[in-house]
Length: 301
Image 1: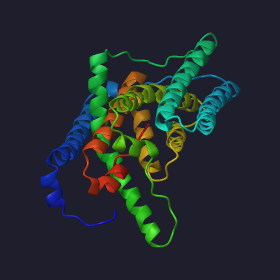
Image 2 (image 1 turned 90 degrees about the vertical axis):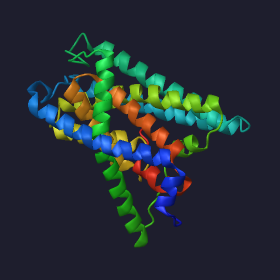
Image 3 (image 1 turned 180 degrees about the vertical axis):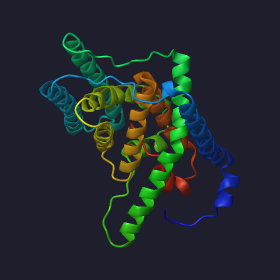
């Protein structure tokens, strides 16, 4: 973090941000203790509650191949459109491309699942809490995970800064979407980005990485390996060295949320709340803290 500042002066100048961030950390520790006690007292919350996706390797490779092709094709298409029509607004095109990509991934998962239900037992959800209970559970689990994710982010940033001080050329840029949210003033664009981050991305990514990749790997590998590999793929998709360990931690937490609750909707809600919280931190944080705090609150989209 460049520059010097007095943290007490910042707190007086931006009390709401510090109140919000402090409440997150304190609330996270409280929820961590409550959920730990709940897991200790209620045996039905312990163990694994997610069915494996029992499709053959070649079918799974076909699914991943189509998903990778769709993601790459959207990136290439947007690049071609920008080069052919340089006067078009790149941010607007990016939003349109993201909508297209997310919808395509959801459709792809639905199609492959429908194709396989006649061959294998395939339950995305083994438990069916109602929407209010899902919302409460997703929020509580997010709060409990937040301090851990934050500590991983701070520790990784400190390590990268130390390595850079020793002469290693390590990129420290945040994701482009983070800067876009911090700079966007058009209410329509901000609303579109918000919808993508809080609705579209959580649905498509949880179907792909947890209901798809994680469930398949769970049937072929040890549970810990399935969690690590699916979370590493999830983190790699975001192409950001600075946020990689934090995003991987988020991925592991999402696998655990899915296993604890047996319902992908709760993982989607966790993911959505995490993204919404990142947006709130981006919009509230003082400029002097943006470098450190953006790294502390990694982007999940």
